Amino acid sequence: MLQLLLVDDERSVVETLAETIPWPQCGIGTVHEALSGMKALEILENNPIDIVITDIRMPGMSGIELITAIHDRWPHVKSILLSGYADFEYAKQAIEQQSFDYLLKPVSDEDLISSVTRVSNQIHEKWEEVASFRKAQYAFNEHLPLLRSNTLNELLRGKSYAEADLADKMKLLNLPFSAGDQFCLLLIRMEARFTELPGQDWALMEYAICNIVGELMANDFEIWHTRDAHDYIVLAVKPRQLNKSSSSGKDDPKALLERYAAQIQTNVHNYLKGEVSILVGGWGKFPVQSKELYEHAVTSMRRRMGHGQGLFLTLPEQVETGSINTVWPLYEPPTLLSLLDAGRFEDVEKKIRQIFQRMLQAGNEHGLSEQLIEAYHVLAGAFAYIIHKNGKQLSDILSADDIKYFRSPAYSTAAQLLDWSIRILNFIRDDAAQEQIDNHSAIVRMVRSFVDLNLAKDVSLPAIADHVHLHPVYLSKVYKVETGEALTEYVYRLRMEKAAFLLRTTPAKVLEIAEAVGYNNTAYFIRVFKRYYEVTPQEYRDSSQA
Image 1 (cartoon, rainbow, N blue to C red):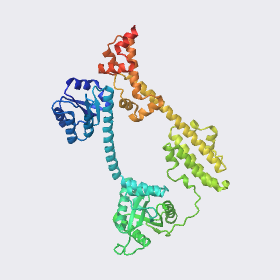
Image 2 (image 1 turned 45 degrees about the vertical axis):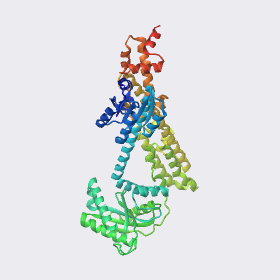
Image 3 (image 1 turned 60 degrees about the vertical axis):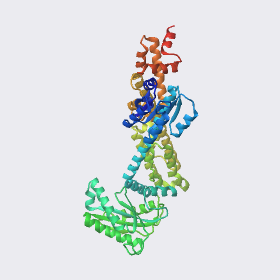
Image 4 (image 1 turned 120 degrees about the vertical axis):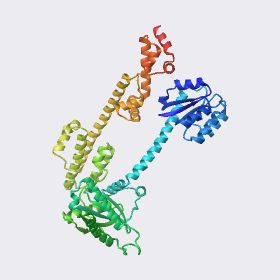
């Protein structure tokens, strides 16, 4: 909560404002009072003041002189000027001194509350922005190796970027790779004693191996590494501008890589007491051939190296693109599982249609039986996964006929399987929408129950949000969408209605009724009651008993 300083040479003005304005609702936790500019500066010296509200016309130091001094010494402090003179020159001076607001006496409570709330929000937004930037910058630097690793993994799995977006990404991650660069992939498989290490030690060995690679190759190659789903260390390497001063003395990148690969194996054996197998992959263009190079390298590692220990393999310099029958869109990021998990149902539908696009264009649908089998099992598994993850059975969401499809698939063409997939997706989408409606209704019920039971206590938005375990901003939006009424308006209306009921049906004093509906300041309660009913509490009671 913020700290506020009231400055006016009239004690009654300062005391009235301090006591009658609901400062906590404006974001103010502490209110200080000063009857002169000099006293105000003394308070500022000893307290972390955020906002100053000051009269302009004061003996000794004027309000303009005060905010000038404040601006010089505490530039972060915001000021609101009050004046009984509608004089343009005062307003002009206030603007020149960067005063936040300029209000004419007698200022209404509503105008003052509005002004203080706005400056309070501005201060919070500024500090949140500063804090968020610093946190983000710190987190980014701390996680830069992980971000680089994840980005390379995404490219290896087929994620694509527009050229400008890729350039921005590489600049952000400080990576010297550009679209169209010739590059090669190296795969390193840790073996022998490395495979017996626990996870933390495995990660340390990975780090040590990458350090060895960097020490050996950094003069001749740009290096970018990650660890893939197979626990291979994957290195994307790009030749630097090789010259006669190069450590290698030669300009043949392929020969260099082969020689470095042998040195890596030797150094790992000598210094880390373990074995690695290394595959030097083919060459291609970055990033469009990243997935192609990677898939070819992994397949070659599996087929040609098997379970051998300490092996070395070099693939042809150029990867030959063959006819691949697998349905790649099933596995390209973002995957069906990740999209369903995030509730991105429109993107799920787009991906499903992309999966079947080539099959439908192929013409001979009956000749695609194995691709259909592959697609069916991935789709059915993803649908069952998200339904079960949401705590439901297939029978809770799907029709009996569609459940039979899970047990005994009945498709014979791509069009039939596509139709079934979209139908199941729509069932899941409709169920998620209904669940959201039910959850929002439950939130509204919890809010109203809490407010009803605690009307005389703290029913501020933060208190309510804490009770229902939601962020205040999110709670406020949900309540407004579900009821058409702002949560603060509901609390205000309920307080006024309960106060009116007590005035009609009990002999309780106005002071007691004010406390019963959450107002500790009787004068303020009388003002807000009159604003709501256009009569004072006593006038309301008299008219109801007449």
